[in-house]
Image (cartoon, rainbow, N blue to C red; front, side, top):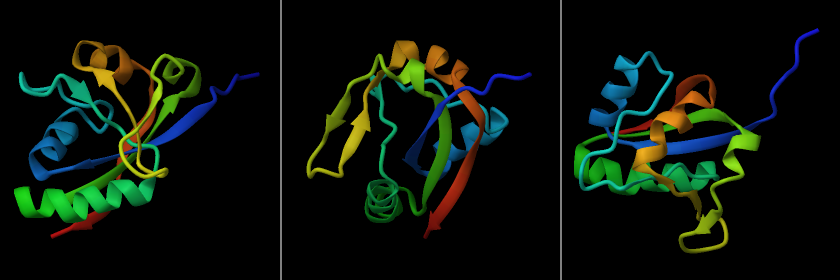
Length: 117
């Protein structure tokens, strides 16, 4: 009998450069943050991720992508949900130095679910 881990669905709006790095990691992990990126921000709402990818990433990077991925729910309990604006604008703030451990709790592959150009 196999035990199934309970997971939480997260989304991440991303530009083409970060998406290329995720592809290089075989769709299983997020790349290390850059020195000016102390926090990794996955979001809890697909609509919020779409807005960022469409309205910000396209303008700044020429393309925006929304990814969806699953993370073990028990592990996510250490990160309080942050409200970054309206009531549906919810994020987790993962310190850059914890990203490797965060990646170890991703279940399955990171999937691209929307693309904007």
